[in-house]
Image (cartoon, rainbow, N blue to C red; front, side, top):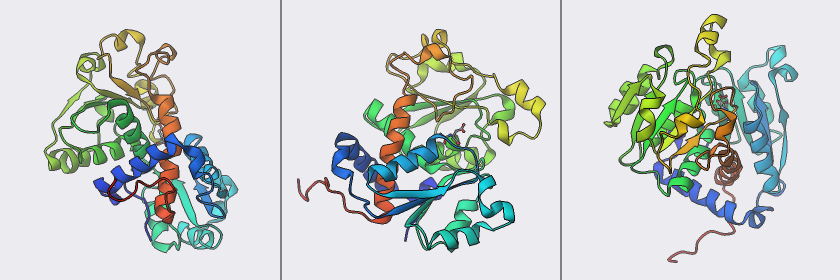
Length: 313
Ligand code: NCD
């Protein structure tokens, strides 16, 4: 039985195959509408979410399956003191697969050790968010036609942003990738990302404070929200929250085929008038999130692909 806890739980080949499946689903969603008939997905969300929970639910419903679960810690037995280990043992009796979001780093990993069904990490604290990464990869691949040879700018809260950590970890497996890390000093990427992930794989990177200066060289600009809920004090958040705002003027400095991604929710990081720019890819990203989650559910449940390419074709 397989889980998806860390983005590296899938090899690069498996990740590419999953993205291929997601693309086949996008081309002909109707062909997949009965694939997970009678299967049940449990969504166990101990932290707020709009997109991730709803996109998991939409994905399972699109496959003809069912969903059950709870949308916040307050309405689950966690408030009575139940452990994640016990919760997943119980949920294993009700569902075929589970997606878990938790404020504690490592909670989905712990759950997977006690689970009799596949567990998907839907975000654990400031740590990882592998299904957002699949969404990001699908969007980058469909905009640029490849995941190789790209200069990727990541801007905003690179310290607490789990989507950033997962994306870097995954993208270093592709060829000719460079990173420009744009953040205030206080919100730089954690040291382990620099030493173990970037330097460990000999990946060229630059750290900078300036979004303007970085713009002309970027193929992808990945904007992020300052993660208010992970700050220890309100004053720091208020001081840092508007560090970067992407505006039309700044977009004028970028390549004509750059793509702007954002995992959403957006607060102030992208001015509303950027939404009409053809380079804005963040709502397309939301749509892709459903297809990759459909592909992921099928992969973890071992469900056959009705549109699989024939051998030797
Ligand atoms: C992200 C998250 O939860 O980490 N949102 C999401 O899942 N699309 C990003 C964020 O909350 O800023």
